[in-house]
Structure formats: C-alpha cells, structure tokens
Image (cartoon, rainbow, N blue to C red; front, side, top):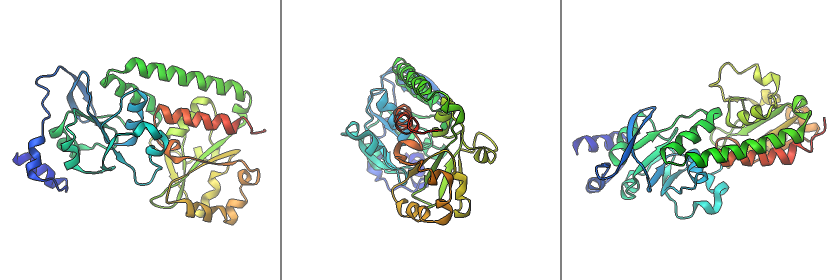
Length: 315
C-alpha cells in the first residue's frame, strides 16, 4: 500500500486513499498468456472484457476488431476520434485526456487490461500495472499494420485483423489500377495545422498518411524528401517563410480544431497564393481525426479521400 500510494503521489494525481482497495490486478483465477512488450512482460487474460485504452489509435483499432473498450481518453489537439467513430463510441467512459489520466475513475472501472502506445510510459506503466495487466504497444506511425496485428493477437482477434488488412489491400490495389499512370507522375503533399502550437507542418513518407501514399506508389515532393534524415522524421514544422515547402501537384491539408483561424491567415498570405498547387486549385481540406494518426479505419477513410480527389486530377 505504501508503494502504491507513493506511485500515485509521484504521478501527481489526486486519488482518495480509500479507493486503493479497488486495486485488483491479480489473474489468479483466470487463465492468462504472457505478452512481451516494450516495458516488460505482462500476463494477460485469454479473453479480456474490460479493456481501457490510453490513446485513440488503439481505441480505433480495438473497435475495428469488434471489441468496445470500457474507457479511453480524449485528445487535446487532433479532431477527436469520437467524431470519426460516431455511434461506435456509445457507452465508452473517459478517463481524462492523453497523459492526464483520472486515476480515480480508472480504479472504479475495474479494468482487466490497460493497453496503448504513446499513452503508456515507464512512469505510469508502474502505476497502471497496480490496477490491471498493462501492455505498451509499439508507436511507429508507418508500422500501423504491425501494431494492429499485435493488438489483435493480445485480444485473440488475429483472424479478424488479417481479414481487415486483406480487404484494405484490395482497396489499395483498386485505387492503384484506377489511377494508372497518374501514380508515376503525381507528387502529393500532406500538411497539418496543429491546434496546439498553431503552426503548419508537412508529414513525411514515414508518417501515417505518408506510409499509405508510399504503399500506393505516390511520391511526396522531392524538396520535402530531401529534408528527411531518418525514419523517425515523421513531421517537419514550417515557418510562414517556408510554407512553399507544401507545394506539390496535390496538397491535402488537415486542420486541427483550434487552428482554423491560423490556417485562414496563411491562406491569405502572399506566399500561399503564389504556390502552384493553390493556383491550380488542387488544395483539399481533410479531417485531422483520421489523416494524422490512426489504424485500419483511418487508413480506409484516407483511401476514400484519395479515391474522391486524385481520380479527378489531370496531369
């Protein structure tokens, strides 16, 4: 109890001490399997029913696999997956915002699994593990398929995940066939206006949307690729003076809630108006709730947008 209390104080969360009696992480009466992950090894129930996800990418993946978590977190800057997933979010509780968890609520929900990618770190992993078996998944944007398979394996939905990926691949092939020679000629840029720091950026070929375009066979502009040093460079922040780096044959712009006014200011700037992609009217505003981070549902939503817009582009 002393150790648990110290962890809670260290985490700077206010949890009533009497609520600590709710801690029941033991699986002594339940069969479990050992899962190795980035922060250690965890014995997870063979059929977890009360799952909490600590960020919205895992939330989306879990729903795609046909499992509804009992709780998740809200996000501060990207358009919430709540808007994207709509009716599939009914009856899911919230335990705070990303990295600002309400531990009292988490305790009272009696989870039998806590899982996530960037929502779990070395510090809160120790705390979460006192509440329920906790697993940290990898967080590599371009490897979202591998993350989906890993999550599916943990919750015994591997067959479902493989079916979803086969269907996605079929849609990708259909788009590739539809675009034909355009694929070799098009350069596509993906920009984002962040709701927190209020500045624009472009997503690299190693980002979530970049990996989908790369798999499709479409390149990002050479002037962007030259700035990318390694696969960890998923985003490059831009000043107004370098907003021209967004220029391409087609530009998709994801604008976070809270950044729309800034986006309009950039649109009215001289340098924005002189970009070829703007003059050619090939700038498309897209939803940041699925264009910036995501899993299989977001990937399919991006394909929907690519079908909608790229098939209209004339080269």
